[in-house]
Length: 266
Image 1 (cartoon, rainbow, N blue to C red):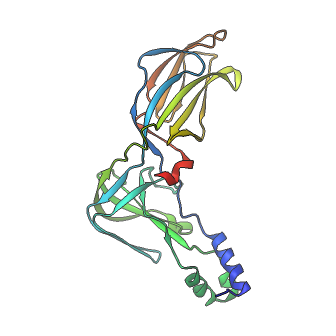
Image 2: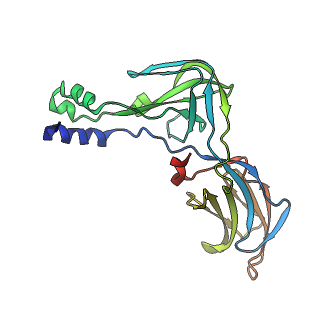
């Protein structure tokens, strides 16, 4: 069946106006550090820390959760497995959240409802897709809050739910060759800075890492860089040889790394 041109145009407008229902993918976990210990004298290109990359965590519910918020009804059953979600930017929401798959509404149903109010009503922004996310505000292994991604305005605000226990399922290693690496670059950016690069080799190739380069000023040493949870301190630097003496005050793991191009792989 072919939509009337006005209906087709309206469908496009409604879709374009829909709020984003998919938070960024959950960060991958860095679960095991395999790094040299103590002081290191490093030349440009040296790997100063490594960590194993694992998939995001999931949870299994120990009870039912029934939600009915802003007309969006959903039931999570005991035994359901829910995967970790990424940062949403919603105020009052912690980093550790667990989200259902996107719940898609019917375009035809939305159009029918909107056209009950005429063409002007049909052109109002609306949402087609939503998803609920759950989180544990007091970290007692019970989900006690939820929020609705895809809702508009105040509808995104988290709300309390009856506490339901869950069990954590730790993500397995992404692949046998998947590691994050911290590499000493040497001089970079300007004459008075040196740099370290955060790299990720995962599922057979080097991957793009957002915000991968970190700088350390060498005017007043010792100085340090914070890279995720890693902390690397530069004690001395020789501008002639470009050799630095460093100390890993905190390794890359346990921590997290974002690899957006792999979001569909896990």
